[in-house]
Length: 170
Image (cartoon, rainbow, N blue to C red; front, side, top):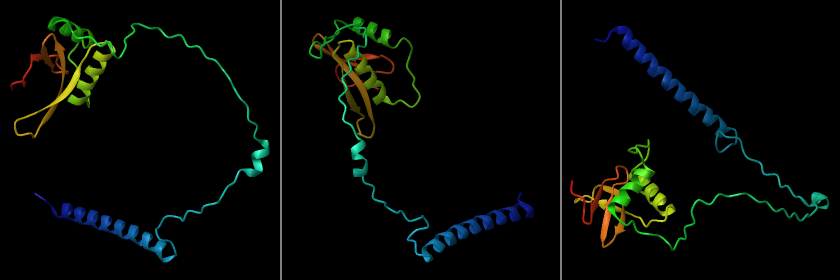
């Protein structure tokens, strides 16, 4: 139950808020009255030229060779992408890449799918991403797919669940 004191506190708070707004508006208007379009200070542009310093500029050609050792773990040409040989190989690859179920704060299905595709491509495997829609086309979900033999295998990137062709039921 509200008391008279609660009502007075609420009224005081409202009065303070209104007074604050009035002060801000007055400050803005004061700036406009004194010749400014806004309450912000006017910007002055001062042209600055360099010609007076050009006699001090010296053109110097620098040639420096830097060698950085790079460890090549595996060479993969963009044209040498391979198919997974079996679902077991795909499952083993998934488990080696993602040993634990992946839950990354702030990631969406798009992030998981693109990360999985990038890892597959870096390992030399063909992998695509695609978007599935529900029947009413109100929700979408990105998954990955790859070809094994004559079959298209769809992969849920976050869990590693796979299914063959068609639309996943459920």
